[in-house]
Length: 417
Ligand code: AMP
Image (cartoon, rainbow, N blue to C red):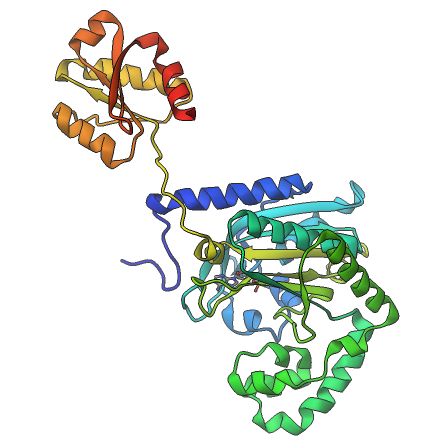
């Protein structure tokens, strides 16, 4: 048996960099006042169809949808915003607080063509802010994630921003776009010909090469913004400038989900390691979505960042050890006592490993080396009798005899040096 195509195991050897990344995200999000939300991995299919949009690639081609034993159509979540909005409305969160700031971390599912940096199960970390119309919060959110990426040692990035306005701008743009697309209709892929009738904006994020070429010369939505949309977009740019966050306005930035309004942004990784899949994150404002799910009129903004892509773009750090101290039983007769010593040290907050299968002193020390333990603690009959242990610093190759009650404290001191 093998894992499903496009879905990967993350084995314990790789997990420490995942933990570091997830912890760094948590810390950064909490520093900005976000609190974690966890929602189900499976949701009613209609949630995604209605929010992401019927003519998007995700809904048309990529969802893992199945009928459960109660004849309900369910879908493995392809992203986190729809579930966040559902939860926000379901629990009437707006009645408790005017502004809610949430973050999440977890797996998402899309049946895309697997490639380097593109998987069918992948991990996203994301944030959502409900109740703030911006534009200052838009700038703060972008600045936050740019700072987070920089804190991981990823320095070569480009921030792209755009505004697609509200419903009014979109309606006027839709007409202009249709006028532009009409003479090209026959050259578009069959999906896009259908999209022209249902939702012409979706033609702009089609990945078929000829469609991309045609989309490149399409008129920009920026010319269709209302005065309010324009002032909002100007406010975002001014705040980014005050914050010193470099950005580039890209009038063709669209993003493949229907629910966006006004601010859109993407951060691209420019360094080696990412290859063709260089979009690190995508986000935007979705001011209409809470209302369309039966909630009160609530503006909102969020983004999702791909954890696999961050790991690919991050400089390779030293691999660290998962063990502080390795306990070695010098003779078979003290194995019980060595197990007790392990427990004492674990209770004192240390990460302790030993080879309970026993074996020679040499083979146990070899194992301590192999798993990169910093310290070995050797216990023999004479040590048990005298209430001491031999503390061996495996890095410095020094050995000391110390009273057993002092062992934990000595190890803590050594580890912080
Ligand atoms: P989206 O939800 O499509 O806006 O994507 C946001 C981010 O999630 C992207 O910039 C990627 O970093 C990541 N991402 C999206 N789809 C995949 C995938 N199939 N495999 C790996 N990462 C992905």
